[in-house]
Length: 174
Figure (spheres, rainbow, N blue to C red):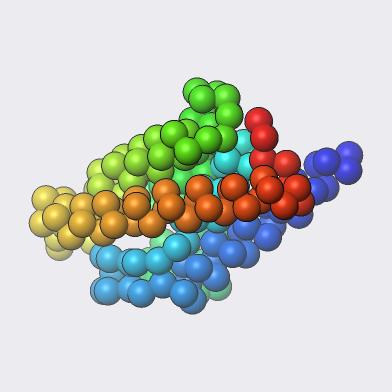
């Protein structure tokens, strides 16, 4: 019971951080490009809490974030799916494929998310929602942003996970 309360509290903190990083501490250019660290707490939730709680953190932070401070003209369910996958994929990679949190598992998780979610899915959801821009018109800008954010996410996730492991505040070991 005590462990479940700790996980719920940590998930709540990570949801709040994801909302703050996405809605307040990111730069948005129109409805189609956002540069920020909003995915970082979601990635960390998947690594620490596992794929299902990671997915919940991603989905809840997107829905609550939109309710608090919408960034687009309207709610796009596909973006919420992508947010959930930002927590689910790192959880699966770390807990089920590598079965440990190490540099390689973090790199694989972040690159997989960046390629699948930022380069493929985000332009798809935006082109379906807005219709005015085609998928291939958005792809170059999204790809440059995705590659840049992949590197940032990898470096910050490694540093933060190692710091959490060394602090012994949170057990990150799988």
